[in-house]
Length: 138
Image (cartoon, rainbow, N blue to C red; front, side, top):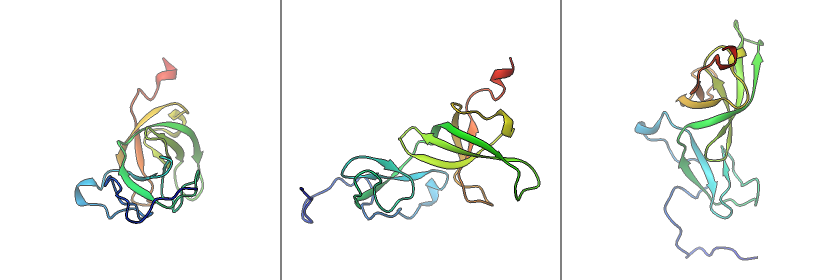
């Protein structure tokens, strides 16, 4: 099996330390993810690549556009119902977050865009629907 040598030059597209780089002030409203330098797999907050188990991960910035893969309504520990969604981002990784809007109006396949980087209470990304939320009612 071939491995990169320590003296080989790597493209400087991000950190290859396996952890996320410190976030600058101008990109706080962005999702940062890792991409494996060996196989190119995109992932969110991992220490090792889930495909090849590589530890050389570089940090990249996401465009913030994705598709709802799964959404569920949660009534526990909150005064009002809220949704918890799995969002498949355009770059190929999946992130758990909340989609703004009525919880019953969010469906699999809806396109979303990131609104803010983190929910102030739960620390999860918050998204908003890109299309009309009541498209099925017309």
